[in-house]
Image (cartoon, rainbow, N blue to C red):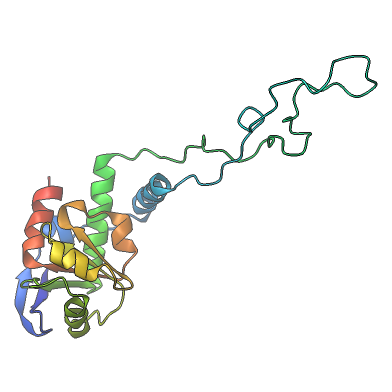
Length: 209
C-alpha cells in the first residue's frame, strides 16, 4: 500500500510504500475489543477506599463492662454501628481490575489499528519531523498545514525527542509516543496518526515477526 508523504509545510512531495505485514492486516473486531478492554482495565486506578473497623482510629478500649449496666454490650466505639465507626462492605483498594493479555494478541491488535488508519487515510507520513526549539507555536503551525488540521492526533516519534515532546504537551487533543511504545488503545483514542518516515522502520523492527 502506498501513502502520500508530506513535508512540514503541508506539501505532498511524494509517496512511500508501507510494509504489508504491518499496514495490511485484516481486522478482527472480537480480538481488538478484548485487547482494548484489557488495556483499559490495566490502566484503571482504584481511588474509592473506605476504612473498616480495623482501620479507623480509636476504639482500643471496651466502652463499658459487659454486664450490669443495663445497656447493650459493645466491644469498640469504632464498630460500624457507632458514629465515626468503620464502614461495612464499602469499596476498598483491595479490588484488582487487571486483566492478562498475551503479547501476540496485543501486537496483532496494534497491527489491525495501524492497517485501519492506513486504509481510512488517517495516517499522515512526513519526510521529517524536527523543530529547533521546544515551542508549542511551531508544532501548532505544522499541524495546521497537514490534513489533520488540528483534529485529535497522536504523533509517533522514531526516538526520544525532548523538543517535540515539550512543545506538544500543551496542545489539546495532541499527544506524542515513541514508535516502539505504540499500542492499540492509544491509537484508537485519536483520529489521526502522524509520524515521520523513519518511524515506520522502528515499527517494523519492533512489531514484525
